[in-house]
Image (cartoon, rainbow, N blue to C red; front, side):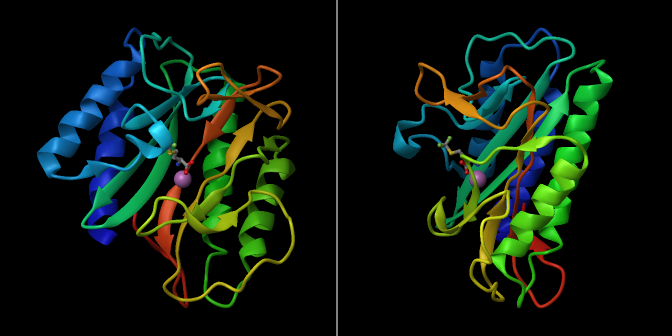
Length: 233
Ligand code: MF3
Ligand code: CO
């Protein structure tokens, strides 16, 4: 997972740097296909429950699971990129959100607060803490900054399967299990600048805010230790 995660982070950063106004979201999928082939890794998402692409590209009011296609990215857009690698039998999963060109101040803040929420959750991922400590820290960071956290989608365990137990809500919902050294987790807050309610597009994949508000998404794959977690991706 360490090896796969490193490749994932590298390609994700490259991808984030390639996002420019005027391009189609499908071009980002092409980049992933090419870079994964070059590195000999497999896209975790392609074919997962029939998902048709290697990356999720979710623009503005799209929260997660946006399918790359003919949509043209515009100046000021908020673009979330979510990517998974399967390498030597293990998955890693990570996401970042970027603003395209000159982005509204509010959108920029949304992105920064979501990044901060992930960090707040990550520092709570240590042996002896409860899973609920991660959820509570994320919610506190998001709501303390005036934004809303999506409730219908969660982080998750990750390893031999892309999605494993436990689910990791991004809001308080009980203490949850005690975290143990060696647990591999994908923590992924999804945050909006409006309400937290979601709907699914007619393509049955793309998840959107119901009120048209903007959304940002960051994700790390990590392993729990006795101290700070080790980030795989
Ligand atoms: N990081 C996303 C998640 O954990 C990955 C979506 S997988 C997909 O839900 F293949 F279904 F798109
Ligand atoms: Co995930």
